[in-house]
Image (cartoon, rainbow, N blue to C red):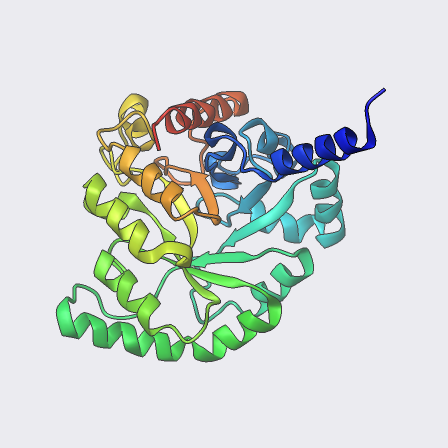
Length: 301
């Protein structure tokens, strides 16, 4: 038997312990993985969906042609069937990638995203190319102004429009991304950050991550390697994947941890030609994504 005083002291001690922060290992930042459907080319989405949890993800990013065709598959099967497929595999629609619609053509797509509770649509920017300095800032300002009516719809539908820093595009530099986030009229405009399209300097990329902070809605774990525009032997093509090419992802992962990045994290590459899986069969593509994931999670952050 213990006294009431000792019992109350024990309860108070236990409550104090439970209020303490858990150990560093338990609170370590973890990427919020999403699976890009285009990693499997035009594979049937029924076959892709079971792979989502296998790579530690909870959500899928569906791509249209030419990179995949899962967005078209959604239309063909209908929203109810696609929703049932998501529910069957306990997966959410986390992102719709829509470069071909562009930033000014997403009205209907944002309504679709709202019906699925999809929080992000990734697309490119519109504007002149090859600018720098004050000319670049002015052009980004024009684009930010043009986005205002589209961002009103984004706010109504609960969607973040994430602009990727795509090569040969208005948003093809770190400065352009910084200007856009400084000039945006709504928090519903964000960044889809693709290291592939920037200088392969890990410290510069890490600084950009810190500068952009929670404005990053999608992060592609993707490096340049030997590029993705020319057909190469598979082992050279795969140099785009984390842990294969020369880019040290350590500083990038550290920066993401420091900002406690909560946006989507997509392990990514482009095959040549577009529309084919990065590897076949499907299990091989999943294995390669998991190899990259093991490399990334093994880095000290």
